[in-house]
Image (tube, rainbow, N blue to C red; front, side, top):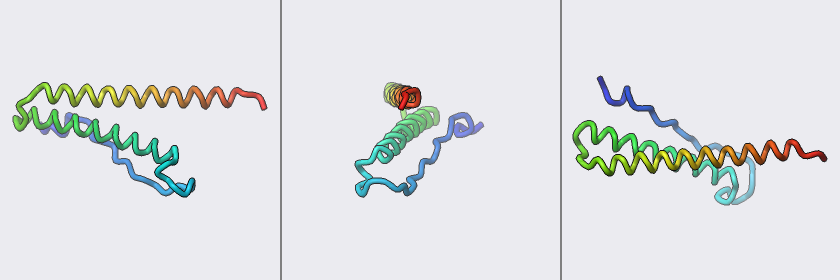
Length: 97
């Protein structure tokens, strides 16, 4: 059985063109997209550390655990930010004009 069949595969994130401010590096969408790319990179890094450890290429278990905890923390942070954004959006929708 291959290790790749067991582990989840990373989701490719492509950068799309959007109409927005002239300096897209400062836009909220760009910041959000970059944060998701960083989250994906930490997940891929943790997966690679697991693969290396299971195949015998890496012999340091504590680096694997640190990578997994970092990926877990990044995911929890992203979920909390998403929850706060949805909560703010719902609150704005409840406002009377």
